[in-house]
Image 1 (cartoon, helix red, strand yellow):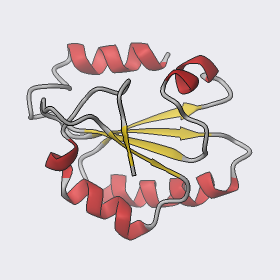
Image 2 (cartoon, rainbow, N blue to C red):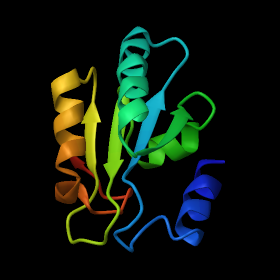
Image 3 (spheres, helix red, strand yellow):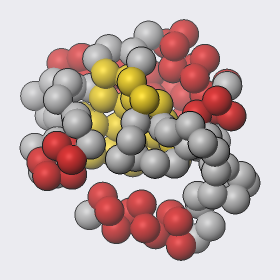
Length: 121
């Protein structure tokens, strides 16, 4: 499911050309209390920012999550809209409102699109 969604985004021109909005891959779980707080803030962001969001339930997508090294909930991977040498940025654990907005406001700094080689914060 997740790989299909990422492939569809790429096929639609949603990766690599610099015009697509940044993508947040949000790893969450139904049992995760901190995830609920992050979800509320992400909904606020989506109301005012042009950002694509892909939610991944780690219990349903164990293999995909594990292949990306996701071990902490919540985990956010920010994938930019243009090619660059730098990989995606990964933030694990509770994200403050200020950090979330700061990363999105400076999206050119996370323009990498390689989810298999994330840089952790």
